[in-house]
Image (cartoon, rainbow, N blue to C red):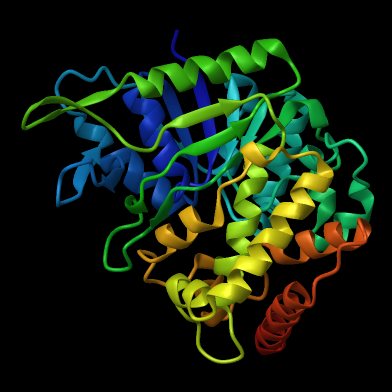
Length: 359
């Protein structure tokens, strides 16, 4: 059975979208009109390195490799979308973008249509946090650009998928091109409803089954969808974000993730352990988490500043504030941390300067 899947965000969303297309499902990407026209004319291109190969493969939606029965791809502006036409909605935009009027009104229609939503944002949707026992989500609202975006959503219809794969749009390319730098897996927590979880499991199996032709026969394609019963598996990304991504933001120029992590490895290890401990206080099992040593090794290959750091350097007045969210969750549990406080203060200062410049 082919599912119809709506993905808000045609940049990072095109990675999950391409994997779903290759698995035979139909995908609609929501984006600006100019980008939608480009995708509808030419399709998307995702560049990904297969195991054992030195160069990236270009996987083009308009010309899927022989042997793959692809789904249908199209792109629409927010105003053109009827959420009732879809089985699943993927949330793949940066959290501040949901406050744009056209997106916000689409989100209202999605909530009213009661379509299950799978977020691949770094910032967990507020309704997802409401599913965590003992966590007072109301106290976390100021971590969001505008928490009212989420007012109409039923928490049982929202789940989180950790956006572990690292990918970016090459600045010299058209906006329908995505380059995957670190082809790890999407790790999704399940929904409350068994029917919705059955859909996720089917998507997981279909993506797992896709193969591309290689020099020695059919070969596996990286970046899978992995579905877990635990609500806490996606929280493993929080330790990585606080240790690496947000510490790319400095008082001066942004620094690469590798430098943020490895310039003071002991401090990085302490921050990582503290955020892991916050997740465990909420209910995470140590098995849900990624060992620091594995993350530190992966960070050796992350030679660019994080997307958050690049956005701040470019003058963005708002970014996803997982740093502030984790700080406030920690405080609510009596788990303050001065290193995290410093990260938040640095980001606050840089964003305040950007806001003054854009006023």
